[in-house]
Image (tube, rainbow, N blue to C red):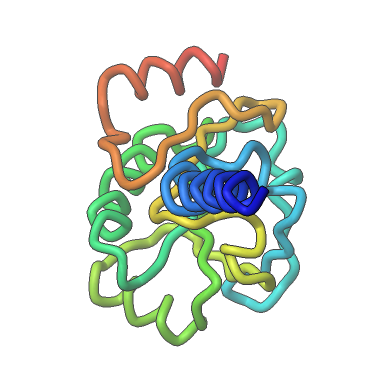
Length: 163
């Protein structure tokens, strides 16, 4: 009997280690936007849902994250090239002081938003976690841990989604 209990306990522990240590955070949460309460850089409440009608890229960012910083110039180039058809939103739970310092240092002109909930609380565990949304706010593409967004494939997808 003791051996059965130990075996079951070992299986439960193993399953939890696999789930929390490996799987959790490797797949982008389905829709963290509904759980996000955001402030813009002027301390005004902002809603991603208000962006309907435009293609949107949302990236969850941390200032300490090298891949996050590498991704920003690519996202800024897309924003520049698709001015009226695309909105790029950068979300972090870090202070506006840190945000301003990173923007100044990197010379990035993307809009940053501060999540009023810790990003881990809304399901974001790896950075960057980035989403491409269609005009209806539906997730078309999601990636974790830095990919190249300024590619011909993504550009074609943005063009297609913005029509």
